[in-house]
Image 1 (cartoon, rainbow, N blue to C red):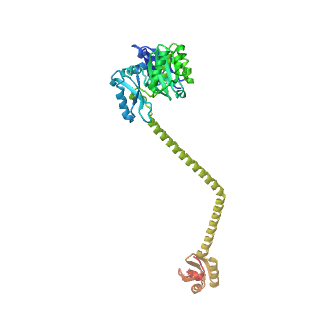
Image 2: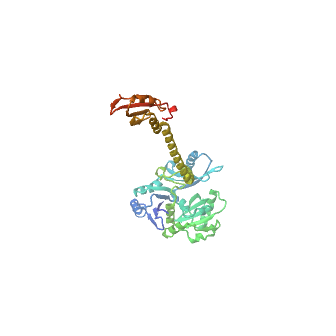
Image 3: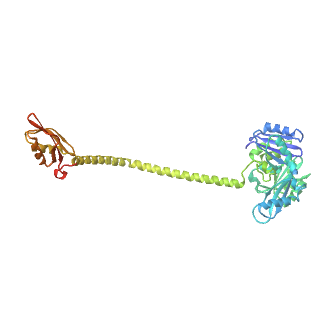
Length: 447
């Protein structure tokens, strides 16, 4: 339970009730005078610092509550019909009224029953001025006795109940069914028989053919609780207050238990009561039913989207896990294949190198062997230079000119010629001869 503050407006002034959200409760009754605003601010600052907005509850005698039966129509037209019908039931001009209504049978066929509450504007403006002076904002303005169902569990309200609450010499009669307030009355009764008669006159107004469970609270005498006239209407008992609420009620002062109990109901009441007399512009912001439905649909859609993304992520994780396991299983085989491919590439490169060496390089040994056989014994070579274009020979011989035809007859050489003039020294002719390679096919050389 969170800290709450309620203010009950009645002829005697204001009764303030503040709860700290646990078991502590503070009550103060302030009389209407020039210092009321200052006293209210002092009480709020001392005991309701963390209570937030303050709920206001109006004495039942300050509010006109009617049960109207109207033709079923669209919601927009229903507002106009209620305003028109309410004018006949108010003792003051409808222009000066503050009103609220709630359909009791929004579905089905036939006439719709509407519960209407209305009061003069000055009735709500007085407490609001005091709250403004105390620096507090209102949460809602309700009919005080209509907040009494807040004190009992919801399940206990699902049957027909007549709740009689006595306080400051007043009797508020509340008729409830299916968890909703159907009607409320301020009755005058000097004894139990008159109270029973007033209850019997109220039952036909809500369409109840017989009696109902009777709850009595507040400053009700024990004689009334035991009265046979009331017992004829139904079982008489105290309200079945909820556990947390019951502990708060035991802390209320005994001398004004009826007033403080009503003020406690106001403090614990709904932030959006069915009959809210607070102007819309002063109400705290809250989501409407349609907005709640929209937000709920957005949240559900978001959750479904998140769930879908999560499911996809999980599926992808599972797929990646299976893929990783398969890769790990195939990894040794892949490495073996890669090693064999590397070895094959190396062998292919070696084979290519060998083939290139065989087809493109100069075969030096056969050429040298052939030169050894062709050249005469008196000739000797100082250097032999071979490349892909041909061979160049440098050396000495007795007759260098005789070497040209000998080299031309070689199966390896062609176009044999001197590259420099022949010179003579040491009884020998020094020569430099170059020759091109014979045709590769016939010579057997590879380039």
